[in-house]
Length: 249
Image (cartoon, rainbow, N blue to C red; front, side):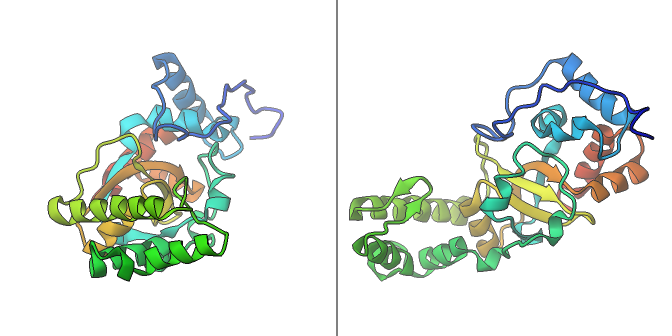
């Protein structure tokens, strides 16, 4: 379709990111859902401005974007610096080919190894020694929004994630809060960790738990095209079917 024949539209897109306070913000009206789905069904090409309204697409997918997957299927985590530029987008060409960090190489994985090896003996852990050394050198670590410049803060951080690790070890993965893991889907169905829930994901990975839950917030356009070819219908319906197939397969 030429640019001259493409339908034009105005899109009230959020610029604050799709997951500022919740993985899925408040549900849009039925008419807005219909407008998004209809626009993409009419013109599914990546040029369609509707694709740039990532938050609206995520809300339109709603609970259909929630998946349960084996954590060992996650091929890596996207750097925070890249994720910051993608918050308002949904389509991410070449998503699985970006500079991902494998789960077992993340600093968080080393933290989890500490919890497994040392438990309550925080002084013996690499994590606690690193936090102390950084503070002593005048460059305290910002750990999940907390500047660890006192031993009390360091110990609180250590114990918080030790408790999380032990909870997963004891009870399995049962998360149902507002801070769900955000996943992206690569061109051939690869699963990428975009943001949120890193300690939960890594702990589940380390423990060999069968599944974690989260929301798909981004996708490679090639995967969307494959969903349409396989399942038919507009992109929203096709992606919903593709996500059902992806979940726990």
